[in-house]
Length: 368
Ligand SMILES: [Zn+2]
Image 1 (cartoon, rainbow, N blue to C red):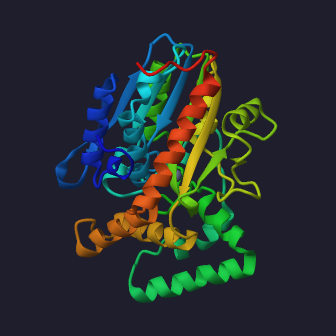
Image 2 (tube, rainbow, N blue to C red; image 1 turned 180 degrees about the vertical axis):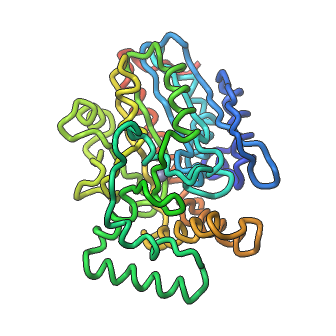
Image 3 (cartoon, protein in one colour; image 1 turned 135 degrees about the horizontal axis):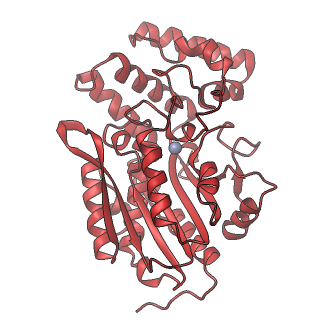
């Protein structure tokens, strides 16, 4: 069975089938949660969950792919690669593993970062009973970021205006304005929504069901699109004063990076799923880290996201330009090169083993 670059798929349907096949072969107990929408060509969409190891284990490692839809091409391949390598046969006796495949299957299948509600799932985990966070800087440039027309002329003039904004306020200020999250432009990018998305509701139910007995929970959430080519920034949203941060550094080393800090490729954000996991799992000690693999330079990625937002708000995904924008999105979040894929599987495997060692109080089992 070939591992490495051969673990990756070129469509959601293929990725889902491979994940289910390898999870079953590795002894996983599978569950399928159907999504209300359809994928390209009318194909069904679902989130798939596989549990390995004893249900009563006091510690559980959760590995999530596809929080940001299209980023699942990398995350799914990394999950499948771990399954193919026989890692599940060597779990410590006190740790179970829960793999969540494509928590945002709509975005995965349609090559979008967002959900079918145009929601960025990692801006959606806020308390909607409270006033929505404001982002006046995004309001100011919303028409430049996501114009209603996507002709060559409009792309050129709006991109130049965004460059001018960066020149006047700094590039970091532009990134913070655009990517920090916004709750007022439902057709825009990094939109957090006005209520919990299907993916948030589904992940909440998965956590409540699979982690109810866990005293210790580790979460590795696989992402792409920020930072240096192939390198995984280990992003943590817990405060650098917190026990969760200390544990993450103990497990993964000093390269664990607080989101929004000087060393991070990410802006400060609100409403991410890892921050929400600890209060959701009040029975457990939660250590959650996002693995963020770099792909293209930030302006290339931003350009793809702007085109994608236009396509689904004003254009036709089935048109020629629709096809080309979907390919542009795929290239922005997945590098179809063996070297890059090798970096993804190697770093995820390392993270997986380190997290198991961190969660377990027992020695690792010998290969049977
Ligand atoms: Zn992401």
